[in-house]
Image 1: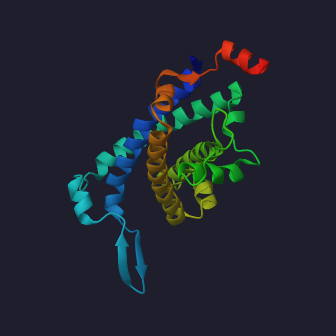
Image 2 (image 1 turned 180 degrees about the horizontal axis):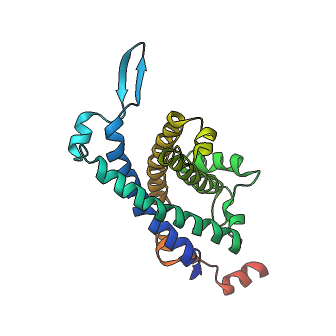
Length: 229
């Protein structure tokens, strides 16, 4: 017998879907800014093996010569990104949802079992509540990454006014590296997240949109018969 069960609150769904376009705008505008000082490469003994963004990539997306536009979008939407994150974190703390989100001692061990199950190496899935162990680690990590992006971004944005923060980050150059690495982390998280959503199926995706999921419940009649037997 099928039943409808509430899974995700309105606040969780709102902040999740608002954050998606905000992060997209932040990454896009960040690329417009990065183009003006494209310094990161994989260089060994003076030979450059990899440039993160080759010229054809910039030209394909019409990125060159949009520095001022990128800065305008980046410095505007960073406030919406930050406020949305603060609102979500405060909600999880006040509502107590952090207990279902934050990793437990056994989460790292169970996350390995989750990965083996997703790869069809392990037949049985590990115990799961609202979030499984891998999701707890990933979703908590993305919150910490968001905080890191805000702090490193502020250090780059106001290096003189917030010089103490710049010092904590290891200087302007190091703060920019951390900011760049965190952005790559978002892209990696997004790809893994999409794969996980596909593997989880339509019911899981629907719950993030509507807040409810459809579950299978055993019939009371069948349960009583099973108990008698």
